[in-house]
Image (cartoon, rainbow, N blue to C red; front, side, top):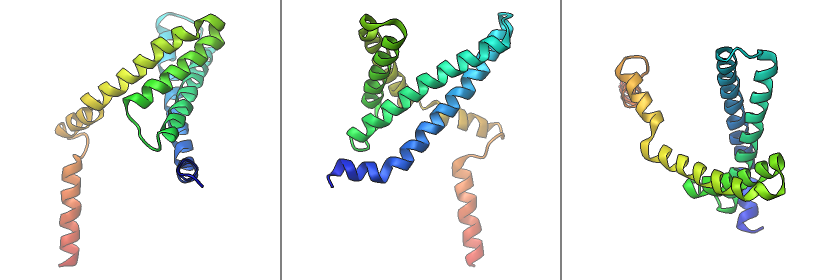
Length: 160
């Protein structure tokens, strides 16, 4: 077996879990935002929410599968370039499916740089860490360092 097949065998279940997690999160976000949008624009919920939610979930499923495929080809490297190529492939495929043959280059040119840039911004700004530290400073969330220190103290007390 070559290294690519070994990587796929070892990382296959983890990749499927990442795809499932991304699709479920996208579907939940799509349902929430489309509900707010439908209420704000006085549209019928039963006609708006399912279609928007399914479109968002299908788009995220295509992107997540492409992203895991690029990750497998690069043998585990996950960076902004992986998101760039996954976004380009997804954009090209979905744009061609939606608008026809001549539009796939437009999807590639728009979604590749968009996805790569968003990945780079996320890595650079780390908004999850900023939100976590803000919530911890307000006492709404335990800070990871404080939790680790408490666990170490409890372990030391248990040994003594």
